[in-house]
Length: 321
Length: 286
Image 1 (cartoon, each protein chain N blue to C red):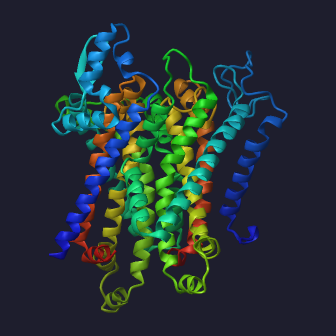
Image 2 (cartoon, chains in turn blue, purple):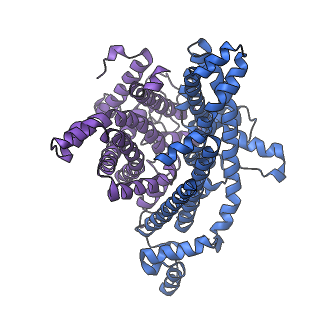
Image 3 (cartoon, rainbow over the protein chains, first blue to last red):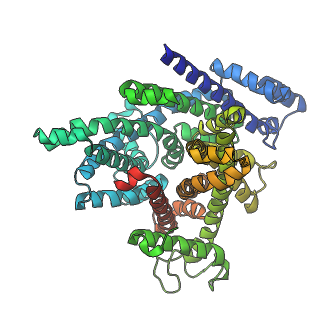
């Protein structure tokens, strides 16, 4: 029973944080030294502009504006994108962009974990030997090269010189699965190098610590095979740390995805934000940032709850705080 | 605190590289080389190690050595200022929150959480794009204003990150016996913070500051690449953005700033790790 109260309190806290975040972003839009109405209606009468201001609540002061935006946002109306020819809904753009970004991040995480787990286990098993040193040092260097640099270098070699993969754009599943993955390989590679390094290092350190536990000595003295000890006795407890860290790296991944999506023209959420800034679509910017914050905060909550279920130790530790 | 000779070889190299970068940043304009905006009209897109241009030139005829030195100045200035300001403000807020507790702690922690609820780069991007907006769209935003906006935005991004670490570190120390003892002897709060809290919290913060330095350098480059940072080769990010336009024929224009940036980030990360390893018992044993 006490546990429920604890989670309820956490959710309430997150709710407050989300309200403050969205309010902060809406304040940010209000302090822009430019009149939004003039951007949207560059040539038009003052009455048109006044009508526009009333329609999105710009005439109401910061709190009134925020409440009107929030009311619409909760109902799924995230505002409009204004072109010279007409308008499009922000939600329409985001609904189209969201799956692409989510797929990109999901592939990146799967790929990074898929490479990092064997490397981490190997370098923990051979800790201090040559294989470990080579892996650790190579990855340390890779972890410091920003993803966009890897992306640009990949474009030079794989995209331009070898012409193996398309350097721009995105293909949906309906355009062919192979086509879809062809467009995803380079963005996923550029995003995952840093993560692979981070995960491998973490897993290695955690597994080396676990290898010193008494139950490992016990298992060895029982004559269990190295492979069995490594995977069942050492990797399993360490994997919780690994997956928690994978979840925590989501924030960096979202940020990195903005740059990568704009380099590879994936047209995901990051690209939409990039386009919104370039096109001075501030309402679009406000709603997109709110969506990202929403996603990020709830994702962290789910991970918290999830890791509490998987490893009861973390649950106790957290409720003590 | 540390003796240079006791450090491992790679770490020594990292320290040396950072020293070189600091030298470029401080004394770059006094070096006997042509200003980076000088155009060598006869040497367009020269490859590295050519006579007269050790790092080559780009397709507009700018000497890349000169560009990269001036870019170092800009990137290092932005990063040092942002980390310095962010670290000062963040740790002041974090230490206050953890030391005073109660309502102050609640307000500050909530503020940190609000800042952390938006991914770093998204927050920086939103801040920069809003703060650097010009009233007249056709008017070019002057460089100094972009620099100020970048520094402010990156500082705001860093405050909650460093603040939360300072808060956590302070919490572990402020409950210790010697703090209680100091208080029972009638030491003032400010004195306790200065004499007992800060010296203990500082090493952890310095280690994190080195890691944050790398993050900021990359963030600056990302923002410049997205076109909201320093334009036209003024910083490493600006150089990368410009090198991107001519990937096919002069890839070295891209490689050189990327190499400088990567080695710098490797160095700060390495030094940050070494510092952190000395603090954290478990990791240093590994």
